[in-house]
Image (cartoon, rainbow, N blue to C red; front, side, top):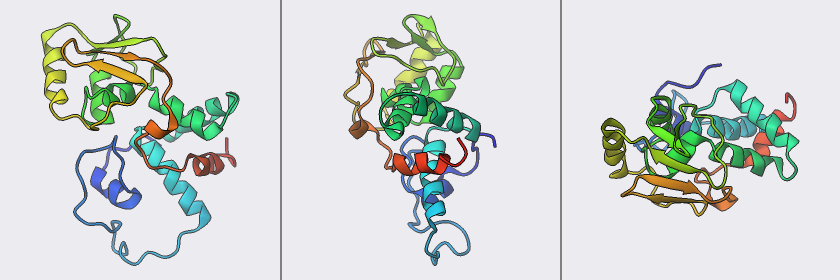
Length: 202
């Protein structure tokens, strides 16, 4: 299953607010579709599936990538759910988004893929690159890159910069100080249900 490229507001109406996916807000509060207003009681499987979809669509992952992250989180000591969120939050595209360099995670992925971002002075064009504490993330020193990010900084996706990051708007340089803490994850999700969903297949 490839990355989702369909209507984003439709997803938000079904799953609730996904801050990384789009800045738009849906006019209708009920889920999409012919029977959106009179939905039946959801099964436990459906609830877990929805939580998994929230994570997958917010961070823009394919099902294969998601499964890989769950397996990686399992190998690390500690709460699998929290480690999973940490792995997703520390991706380069998400870190660029959280620093305000891009209005959404898909826009941040495009910035990274097109070579506008450097890590420790070297261009990194892999969106899934795992940022580590102590690394410096900057805008590439060329006019096109700086202009792009200057425009984006006027309309950041999220108002607050998380405690594990710092960003200097004048120098267009940010730093990763530590791993993200759970309360700074902007997405409303129950990560335990996601781990339970994958426990049958991972």
